[in-house]
Each structure stands twice: as C-alpha cells, then as structure tokens.
Image (tube, rainbow, N blue to C red; front, side, top):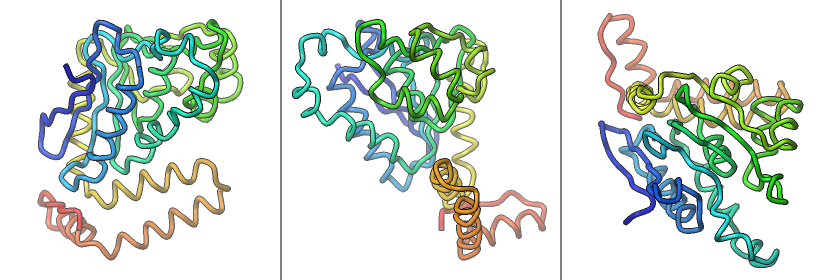
Length: 256
C-alpha cells in the first residue's frame, strides 16, 4: 500500500494524501521520502496550479514514528539528511493548502506549517510534544512556529508540549480558517480550485515574494514586491485579466 497517494480531483489541482491509517499517519522515513518525491514532481508539473495536503477525514499526522527513532544514534539521524526531504515541500513553487482533521502533532504540525494555507476542522488540534520524549522540534517547530504565532505562544507550545485546539490555533494565527470537521476536505479543495483559476504567474510571484519578504527588511521586501509587480506586465495573463475586467467577461488565464 502506498504511504503517500496523489489524486487529481479537479483540473490543475492535485491532492497529496498521507496513507498510514494504522499508524495515525506517523511520519517515518518512507513517508517523508514519498512526500519529497511527490512535491518535487508536482512543483515541476506545469499542469498543476494548486496542491492540497491532507491525511484524510479523521487525522492529519500524529508526528514522527518513534519506533523508527528511539534507538537511533546522533550520527544515524544526521546522515538521514531529513532536512532535504522537508525542503522539497518548502521549495514547492505551487500554493499548498493543508487540510487538517484531527491531530496535527509534532512532525504533523511541522508538516502543516510547510503549507501556505491551513484549513482546520473544529476538532483538530496542534501540538509540538517533542519535549515530552526528551528532544525538541526538528523540522521547523521552533522557527516556522515562531514566525507564525510569535515568541510567547511558540515558547508555550514548545516548552510544555501541550496541544491547542483549532480555535486557539486560529486566534494565535496558526491557521487560515476553521470549518466544521465534515467540511475540511471540501473547503480545502474549493480554495485550491479557486487559486488554480487565478493567473499562474501572478500566483507564483505572490508566493515567492511573500515568503522571501518574511525574513527581509521592509525596504527589501517592498523592492521585491515592486519588481515582481513590474515583471508581471510582461505577461499575457496581465493583458488578458485587465482587458477581461474592462470588457466585463471572464478571463482565460494560460500561465504565460
């Protein structure tokens, strides 16, 4: 059984689904490798304009597979080069929407934070419990979390290992929106279809500039934004979009 499944439910949209229900979608090396391979392929596929990342209707991912880690040495962990597998997700140029039902704990929370939007069900929970087993987050749970929610909320999550509900996560800025559990998958797909209908070059520039600007000065970020804005006037989609608006018709974006 494939541990990572890719589906194409709508034009220009892919769904990447974790498929280890017997292990609550725990992230072992095979899952991380599968995710890296699929995101690298989808990121390079010109037909894909948006990606939904999910674990399914009942659980997102319960974290790392401790059976695979408990007796490993520091050198074994280092030689795994797991950060390269995570980077394949972070570097994906296509917008990624995490659809989170149930637990997004440990590596599952870190995986969700690799997305660009997070749609959480009302019953979802987020947690960085690594401190409870003698380690710490190792795939962005201190760095991405701090950038998302600020120092004091991140410290509380990482130092206590306690979970927060979807509503708490929403209030602290960790998720994009919260919907009823039964609507998570449909809402994430709806957003993906909507984004896929937007001009692909503009979408790509928005994602690239927004992420690059996070760690830049305001002046540098504004320069990146300005240059990307100017560049888009060389695209056919810019002409199509503005003329369609003026002509009161639906635009037909082709990504050129």
